[in-house]
Image (cartoon, rainbow, N blue to C red; front, side, top):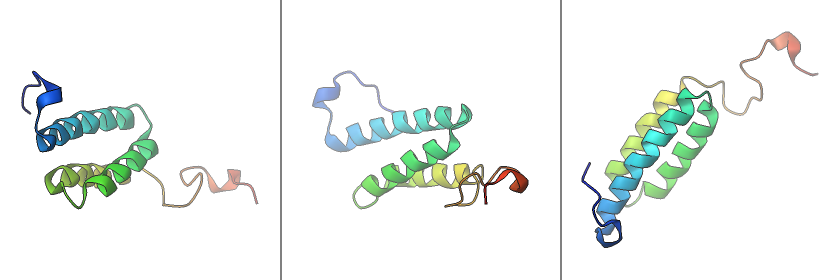
Length: 89
């Protein structure tokens, strides 16, 4: 990652690259702190924003999203990781 001496004068693509690196680091920390689903939601939003124009940065979030998704329950099922006998009818 490039040094950030004058962020206001960076070229837009370099700024996106640097901010993506910062956000990826934060999302990994969020997941490691037990907030995996929230980290996945935010990584998905970043993918949606970056997909069309910033393919390299999109790829980083896509990879993170796929790695983290293994640590979550099934999509759309509240409390998927809880004991089925504890669920409300």
